Length: 175
Length: 175
DNA sequence: GCCTATGTAAAATGATCGCTTTACACTGAA
DNA sequence: TTCAGTGTAAAGCGATCATTTTACATAGGC
Image (cartoon, rainbow over all chains, first blue to last red):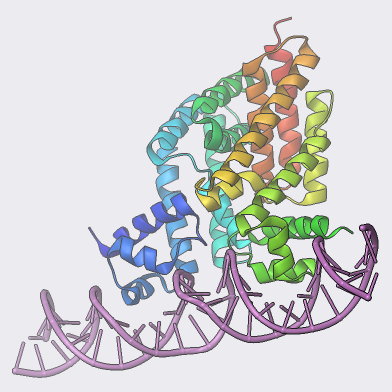
């Protein structure tokens, strides 16, 4: 496996499992099996590594959420949580640990959330035939809620979110 | 103000603003205006301080969520977010930063979430006349979703969650 | 065969980590 | 008046922090 890929996926696991600040550079280098010099050549700094991890994760996440209906969206979320574990949104955790003070990281987070919102908006629009920002926002909230409830309730909550979404999609559509 | 109160409320602000791990003991002692010896006499360790902060915050939070209807619940949440800021659930952030590995902290988090869930269940039951665990879980998910969406969308999302909750409360009640 | 890329291991940087200890001052009750 | 309780300031604990540096190996293209 490519060094950069190995570094980033190792870092993603460690950050997700132990938190960003609590994960030191030595654990990252040892985990990836590379020297610190090589690490710094690849991502420049710890913040750079964090941003790279988030970018890569965001790409993978949105690829998995590339579905055609709201119902499938929640199925995909459940699959993701089962495969990756339920420790909450890594982007929001990064925001919390940095206080939103690192521009490079803050921008990555905001951009990811903007993309997710747009994706949900498109899925909703495809399903009901027109754009409905308000309905899409409610689905996003259920999505975000399911993600975070899963930390302490497991994937059981995703089924509830899915059910609630089904109601909203039925009741709220005007056409 | 009592030293212990000052310590805990200062720590709560610093942890919330900058994260738990990133906040060092010297910032905490300087913030509270006490010596490190005094701090350690009061809470024993940093983990002890974290647990104390979470306990205090949980008490204050649930006091503010002591309402009689689901609609009021979301109004109270909005008030909370405006007053306290929107940096996500401090309990889940603590979970993420510790990996759930510190028993003292993990137990505090789980207990708080259990209480919140029970509170919502009671509010729902009072409103529709009978207990409905599934409906309550959906409300909890909207609540959790609004809390976390607020990090990057502000309180606008709370209004959406409130609206969605109103739909669910209307559509799903069987009596 | 040499040059540049890219990697390693390991030491050193100064700062900061959580936590303990030492030495001293104030206060209220016995 | 003595004494336990509670506080301070400041030094020190060994460990770890993110980052840089030094010295050396290996490999592919010219």
